[in-house]
Length: 132
Image 1 (cartoon, helix red, strand yellow):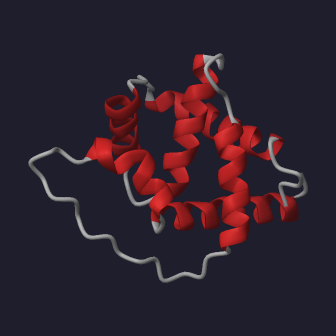
Image 2 (cartoon, one colour):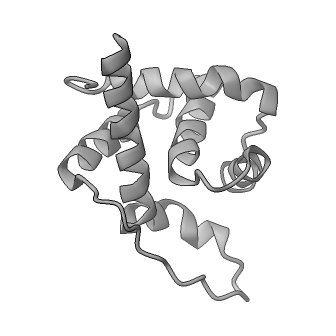
């Protein structure tokens, strides 16, 4: 990808992250598992930046298409790492990895992130008609 295409793809992924964070999609895939039964769920705050919902749905469809029951452990790790990288940008890497470990039971080291995030981006782009 050219630098301009790379920048456009990055913006699409950030848009997807904002949409996922501000929509029922994110909460349906994480909240029931991330809130202790004795705790109340924190109130959701709406994201102020404009969101292109149609484009976010395209990225979400591509993300959903990654892997499956027979995917490799590396693909599974990349799928969840890239999702949290864009959805939970305010959390530290350690917090993101603890979430993945707690919810999906995947043990990922911080040293793996430098490879998993680009690989996850590649997997999403592979399932899009056009990544930019």
